[in-house]
Length: 105
Image (cartoon, rainbow, N blue to C red; front, side, top):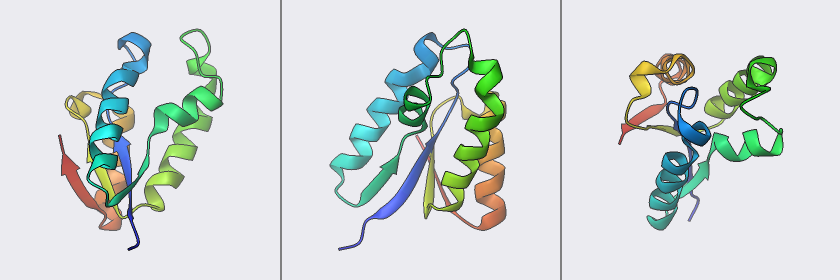
């Protein structure tokens, strides 16, 4: 069975530890369903060395990567509070424009 690639989107900036706990909980929940190959952007941010001190310098690079990841997915999973996040709203708009399935927490 081929798994559906799903991207997790939600608020990061202004949250403790970039809201990693919420993203990681969502990833575990989606993986446990057994049908999703989950793209969790906090993992990519960790690999890229994004910190509270340097996130502004890395923002363009991260958003470009995240938009590319959305384009490669069959679905996007919106965390609570996504509507207050500029990045998550951009990812949502991209998914909607591409006709990608949108799910909400």
